[in-house]
Length: 73
Image 1: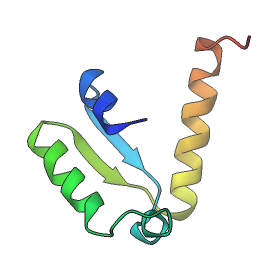
Image 2: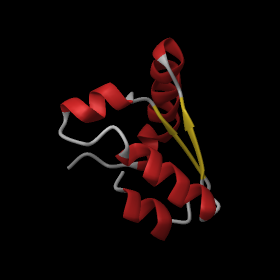
Image 3: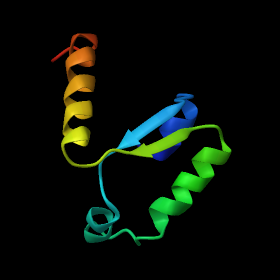
């Protein structure tokens, strides 16, 4: 989800799984994620990084819990 929409949707907690090395490979400066984290923490959004198997497990849980909320066209 785009960081702007996180703010507009009033999401209180974001758990992300990408490491800064992955973001750098995608063309983002390694410092950029830290800037985002500071900005959103000041806005009341909790930002946490899940690593390895935990990131996979969390993503699978979210997809399983929300799959019935979306329609396939």
